[in-house]
Length: 304
Ligand code: DON
Image (cartoon, rainbow, N blue to C red; front, side, top):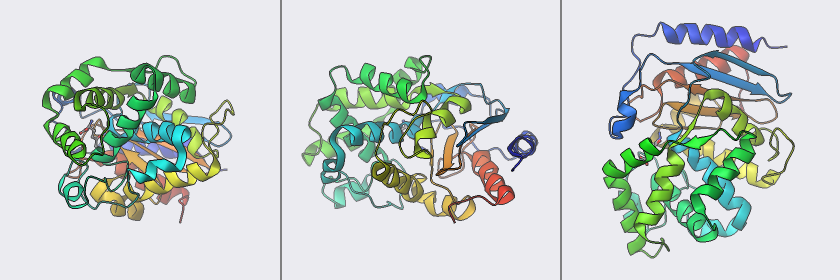
């Protein structure tokens, strides 16, 4: 059996000694204060054995990782009709770019770039009685953890500086691909991105993606087919214009966030979450990517 604990310990040690740690996301002022020396990692295997190292119990803002959770909720509610409003192709562009959206008449390339996630948010705002509360309840159920919450300060901070997201939402609205008003949809979107979790909670929340759509308590959230689709989207679109590099170096479906978190998984084997707040120039956690490359290289476990 693979000794995951020793590998995680070695990864955390390497990360603690790294000089080049990347840069914190400065465009959300509330995130700019986080210590770049933080590093955490947590792995849960299919038998629900848990392994962790470093600052794995410290909560951080999961940001774009939340896009996978909102997508999961929407797919569970409306199924395939989602694809009439969002495409499933990698964009090759940064997460907040708008040019393709204009060229492609307001249909976002995929649900993991900002415009795509804003369309998903719009659908949830239409479908849910109390959108923010209902989404939070969904995530808590998935995680089997009632302590998970939004970070209201982060949500408010992003609202003040979210100019590009306002631009994206207005562009979507001009093409008729946003039903609700821009402020309501973005208020939901900024809250979903502000979800605060530690590596342990994140890996446990994503357990269903290695377990055919069933959470740790064996409750069914998605069909096997829906899990296949979401994992495919994570592989091809989860790291924006660095999706190729992540597949090349790590070889797993995964999703990053500008809070410095990454979650990655090997279906039927394990799910792993890392946190290191410094980002590379594509907006993905610098040490998180290095850590996951080390994990899949040393264990020789990847989808390839
Ligand atoms: O909308 C934004 O810009 C942020 N709330 C989320 C961006 C993000 O996490 C990109 N991922 N690496």
